[in-house]
Each structure stands twice: as C-alpha cells, then as structure tokens.
Amino acid sequence: MSRRHRPTAELFADARTGDRAAIARLLSLVERGGDEAREIGRLASPLGGTAYTVGLTGAPGAGKSTLTSATIGHLRKQDIEVAVLAIDPSSPFTGGAILGDRVRMQDHATDPGVFIRSMATRGHLGGLSLAAPEAVRLLDAIGRRWILVETVGVGQVEVEIAGKADTTVVVVNPGWGDSVQANKAGLMEIADVFVINKADRKGADETRRDLEQMLDLSDLPHDAWRPPIVPVVATEGKGVVDLWDTVLAHREHITTSGELDRRRAFRLREELREIVARRLEQKAREIATGEKWDDLQQQVLERQLDPWGAADAMLDGIGA
Image (cartoon, rainbow, N blue to C red; front, top):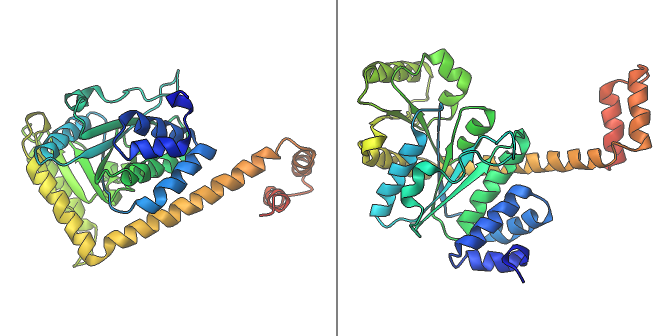
C-alpha cells in the first residue's frame, strides 16, 4: 500500500516514532478537513497537553522569519526539539502557501530536531482557525514540546492564530507607527512580549518609548503581566537569548498564576463553539439547494418572512 493511502492510525503510529513523511502527511489531512482530520483529532487528543506554543506575529517585513530562525538556532544549541507552523498567505493560483516551507529557515531544513510546516490561509477565515489548533494538537501528541507559530502578516486570520498561542510575541521595527495604528492591527491586545527587531537602526529608542506609553495607558491590573520590550537584531542573533529568557519568564508567570490553564480552557471552548457553528453551517448548505430553501428564500423576497425567521426555519429543518 502506498504511503499516500495508508490508514490514518498507521500514519499516526509512525509519526510518533519521528517519521517526518508521516507527520507531513497527517498535517496535510488536517488542513484538508473531513473524516480523516477528525480521526487524527480523536487519536491525538488523549496524548496532548504538554507542548507549549509561542506565537510570533507582526507587520510584513518586521523580520519574523529571521527571528524565528534565530530562535530555532538558540533552542537547538540546548538540544531542544522544536516544531514550527508558518502561517502564510494563500497563493491566488494554487491556494497553497506562497512561501512554502520557508526559504529563510533553510539552515534548519536538514536538522532532525526541527520540523517546519507552512499552512496556507487559503482566504477562508474559518478554515485555518480550526486547522491550526488541530495541527498543534497533532504535533503535541507526537512529542514536540515547543511549537512556534509564526505568521506573515497582521490580517484577521494571522493575528487570531498567533493570539491563540500560550505566549504571543509581537515583532515591530523602529518607526513602526503610533498607538492608534497598533490598536487597529489588534496587536496590543494579544501581545505578551514586544520585540523591537532591527534595534540597531535609528528610531529604536523612540519606538520603545511609544510602546511604553501605550502600555502605561492600557490600565493593566497591578498584579498583571506587563509585556516586556526586548530589543533584538535577528540577523546577527543579538538579543535572542534575552527574548527566550523572557518567554520562559512569561511561561512561569502564567503557570504559577493559573492563567495558562484559563487561557487553554478558553481556547478549547472557543474551538468547540466554532466547530459546532461550522457543522451547522455545513448541514444547512447541504439542504440549501432543496425545495425548502427555495420556498423560504421566496418568502423573504416577497416580504412574507424576515431573514431571521427564515434562518430559524432552516435550522429547525436540520434539528438545531
């Protein structure tokens, strides 16, 4: 039997032994969704709960991939295995991840202690938000204890995914813009750590003051974690050790305070709600071409029924 058509359970067993091809195949099935993805979820769920996820996000050009690569190098010097999920914008032609498996991380491509996988947004706001946590769950189940989730941009999908990590690192550059722009991007709300990359450039001190002022205005509780600001020059590896020490300090803080458990419980509740919503939508679409749909649509067009009432009738029809 070819690898491509092997049973999911067999692929999963091989993935747990470190078979990289099996891991890649399982992640492809997770992205595709459907029955095989649900089977992977059933296999992975009981074995997870030990991985720690770090999200890295920020504006395009901030140097996130270079910083991720430098962070991988720091971890590997300590013989720490790491997996990377790189969230890329979709190709308008193929729907695949434009940047593939990250040409900027090729220094680690042959390292068996590093697994890098790109996931395309594909233009669907809902799809990736379900596939990404399932991919993290799979990597957790096969024994990866540190998972980096790096995003290309600061669109809704990218910020949402990065913000679902245990620790979220927001990368900015000198001259990045004012607090209003930052809040519009949604970055202030999700940041646990700020990194000023390219900190050797003019304007780094002003950027730090800008961030400090925004944090002063954020009205944090007195005992809350205040996001530290770490200067880094990722191309030279400067500041990467300080960044990782800060990530470890944040992990210790939220573990001790119970915030880590609260965050993970919240994420699971939100994931469950989204799965239920998607399943209901799928069922509704399955009957959306039938006579009942046409009849309800006509009633709305003729103003005999409002859209909310029509939706209620449709949901009644699928047992919701």
